[in-house]
Length: 251
Ligand code: NDP
Ligand code: 8X3
Image (cartoon, rainbow, N blue to C red; front, side, top):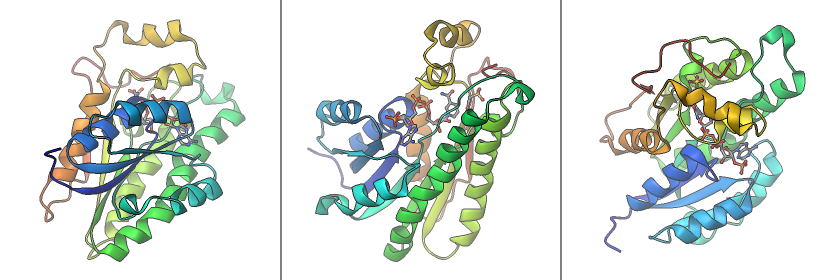
């Protein structure tokens, strides 16, 4: 199909938003792509619509290490040599101040954005180290750096992702494995609908005064990190809508 083969990339949270677009962009650039998420139908459509037929749907929940182990132990041989891990799966739930917060929402965010990211990393990272080269891209958020009303636990989970990314880079010195963090601001995906538990009107109202980022804007940032020559490690890319002020979040 004219693409130069670049290895295998595993993208978590690939059934929607950034992850789906990252899977498409990496496929178009020559990667075999493992697209991981919980919603099988979405992943199936993504794979069927890929013009390069390079996307493999893998159904798993990052919160459940057994489901990850199972799914990743059954990979077809041409997808086994993973060289890129994009830790993108994540969510936000709720938007009130912490003092009115909901512990079940806190747990869901921590279990997904923090523990889930670690669960997948635990399985994939040793494989990258063993092969002597690779790249991990973690999706953070501007919420990690700039506080906004109602960001609280979500923002803190993303601050974890930012600091973990820097620390992974230290631990991986000399292994040939690079680590980048991509931190987007407000983007139009299903993120706001998930945060507002399906209230589409409320989600749409967010974008009234801002031209949000697209999933493609973020996917291009991920691809740029991967495309740097091996001696360059992009530590962090932060990108925001040009008209998003600091402190404007989803409250
Ligand atoms: P979407 O809601 O559109 O996509 C989130 C993806 O994560 C879905 O594919 C979802 O798939 C997956 N996911 C959620 N929970 C799990 C789980 N337990 N196991 C496996 N997959 C899971 O939102 P975005 O594309 O916007 O979000 C992607 C990342 O970007 C998140 O980490 C988010 O925090 C971050 N982000 C988003 C911003 C925005 O404004 N949109 C800005 C900055 C960062 P499924 O439900 O099928 O499992
Ligand atoms: C969430 C996006 O702009 O509300 O990661 O911080 S924003």
